[in-house]
Length: 69
Image (tube, rainbow, N blue to C red; front, side):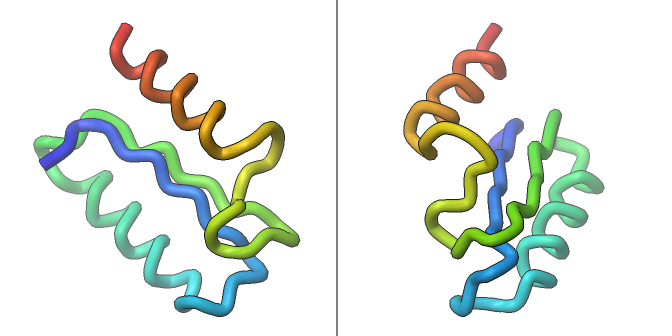
């Protein structure tokens, strides 16, 4: 099980219900082996491009670097 999780979900997605990501985040937060769950919903975005600023690749790399400090 990974210790760090980053989940972004767009409110305007059509792939799955928002409750799927919410339930995943809540389950991970209650799992003893998980250190941190970085979960955000993003208004006006779909499932795959759910970032508030910047682009998903750059934001993910910055998040990984922060977790590894």
